[in-house]
Length: 330
Image (cartoon, rainbow, N blue to C red; front, side, top):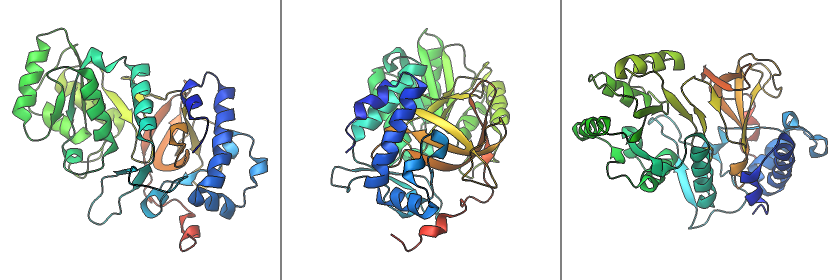
């Protein structure tokens, strides 16, 4: 185990982040066989890695085919699995210390929104509730419990009950977070459900083949019009991460101090962009200390002039070039 995990949530400066990132890089290089082999196959000399841009990022696809961990899994290991179709292999994140995940999402939520006890939390996550091993359901379950509000809860098929609770909450001064997958929120607003200033609507993405994929701006415009509210918030996370970024209604994502985004060139995925143009999203998630903190995702985005992340879509060809280097090596 990495000995400085307490420092992960105490980062106060860019120099703190860099120092801890390099420390975790060297730890995972030695203790994570998958990441260590990836760095070796790239021909990277660890002694020359001095900046964030020089750190190699592991293609996220390896979470589908390998155990990406720094220590062996045990009976206490929690397995989070991504959603997938029957033709897809789900990604699996083996979490050997669930308390780090809880600390990460609770501190992140409080940083952007305040304590869960200030809110009633309504979670509209139908497809996630129908399968096991969802990290999003785990997070929402903890937030719902910590809210301690009698109307907080999950909603699967009982939409009438959700609508009843929404009408009750509209009459109060209670702050409410309605968090849901994109298609479920669209279905709800298509039913003529109007909200008021008590509500924060937070979409977590995911059409899951039920509707046409939309740009964030198109989705948010649809939901704003349908719910008759001014802003739509977003949560950006994934099975392979233990931290989340949030957009507070402006389609710009901010991350907690222990998480950072870099943008890589599309044609040269080992090169980091230094402009404000679109490329592949690389994530540094220091809470992933026990798996891999340096992940090349399949998402496209850019860092704008405000130093915030904007999501632009997904790779058409989702396989990051070079993943087959390790087939049969581990």
